Image (cartoon, rainbow, N blue to C red; front, side):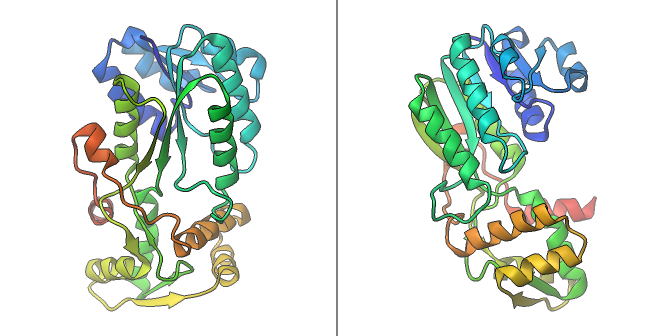
Length: 286
């Protein structure tokens, strides 16, 4: 069986590829990327590195030739990636791929205000409507992305949030990669939807408590509305598109769309998911 991973030069793709190359014969692994030179080290381990660009649909089927099981990692072009994802699914079917695993987001439903939802919901719909077998990996927010905000709160004594009392089950990229690698290398996951989460759902108050522990000083929680939160990010130098995206995740948290905790990491990999606090402490020690 030949396994392929798209976006293999990105952080999640590379982490997944490393695990897969340890688990199976590297000659049965195809890694696609827009930057093949970035994967020279994995090619040296025996992987077949191929160029693939979702905006160049005419060449995608050739990139997927001979592949049985494909991990389709969502691209980073938020709001402009659905057509590329659809093109990749069409090409996968043309190439004879049997099973596609897709990296999605928790609760991709219309009520979820996270700006990434439309792309993921559209891709999931296209995959369900295809003749391909599928598995959805609905990865929660990455734990490492909280490190800077918690460090700033520890230094300033205040944590500003638009998440209200909502909670998020932050997960590490490494745990997401381990789950993806497990699905790629095991049988029996077709037709399954997996929420991939950390071990607990944390509120802004929990993050403030962690910042208090790290900084050794009181950290106040400042709750603001979405418009004020986005304006604050932009005034701090965050690009407008990123500020809008981060604000939308806070709104999704406030609405309860990121709070579900699953046992997926342990069930599929046999490892205990890493806690957010451990990620932050390790990052701030380095």
